[in-house]
Image (cartoon, rainbow, N blue to C red; front, side, top):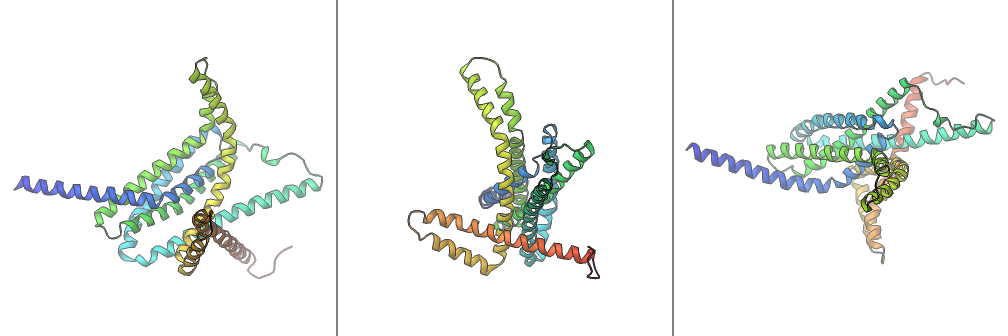
Length: 324
């Protein structure tokens, strides 16, 4: 009897593991797009710190990401069990926050360049203020700000990954839901921040390869490849800054449009119409949803920043009389 019970238990465990493996595979496919955006966003977020602090910063953000998921997984299970209607509004709030942060970055960049151009036009210093290195206290504060910003962004993207995964396993048993969500959370965190670490240390790897001595074919190829990596690293990080900002609008706008059924239907209709064009139809059909989601994200971010600025101004001047 005991042996039969053990075999039954092992059979149940094997069945659960099979379900988890299948559900994890499906969830990984559905979250692949978010994973790419997560990678671009976080690589962009942790760029700009000193070389010797890059890996510690990535590690700090990765630990913050794990903490995020330790909050999100139980919260998602509780919300799904007791208030499933709250999942979509919470996701949409997170999407709006991403759009707000993305547009705030654009606005800050624009204001910085405008002020710099005005200073130069008025005969100010011609040197680039961004080239001046802050003091050590400022560097630590800058690093802490980068880490907090990356963890905050990771929270929104992780919430979307968890929500997508929860949708995949919604009809499964509670145990399968718990294990699948935990597996996806752990694998995504290791995958994203492993790649982020590789990206931010690419220039160091290139420098190591470029300094290798020897005349062998592989060594000469390594020196050539290392030099190419060193030269490409600044362009890659600059590109990730642009891609990361676009990803904020794409992911945030996508969350918002998926929560607004009518707009989601219109985007699907536009993609179907684009697919009817000759030759480039399939490409346009594939790109149209992402493009429209990005545009919607930019508009939502602009409105959110405008609203936030109005609220801050009203809070600062409650009487309605602004100081000169």
